[in-house]
Length: 161
Image 1 (cartoon, rainbow, N blue to C red):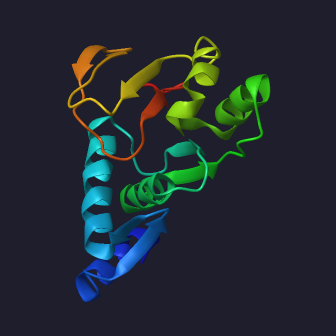
Image 2: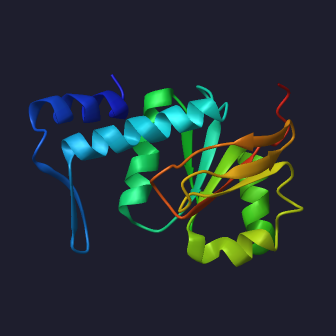
């Protein structure tokens, strides 16, 4: 049993109970589980696999929990990154951890963009849009909407596919 299966069990037992609260927003277990499943499927479609390490460069928010549960459901490993870390130190942590994916808040987009060359093979997604075209090592691909956070970068560091 993992954290993802605990969410699934709680969604079945207590679908309408509040699972998360962020400011004025309340998310039920059923809604959380559905959103997590959609995100997990998007991550699988992006070739995030069991055992892949994924860095979360986010503050405390519903999106953090959604990503955490989605990663747990697919068997990926969460690498939390302190928001106070900047520049080369962030690049070092992402690369040294072996992270293949870096999620970040849209408020940090300029900061991440300034390091894009150091985070090789990046895939940028603006998930506010209904569908997204993204440049990857394998060409241009249609991604679709992920309703979790405003932006993310996927880094395929050292991945041989």
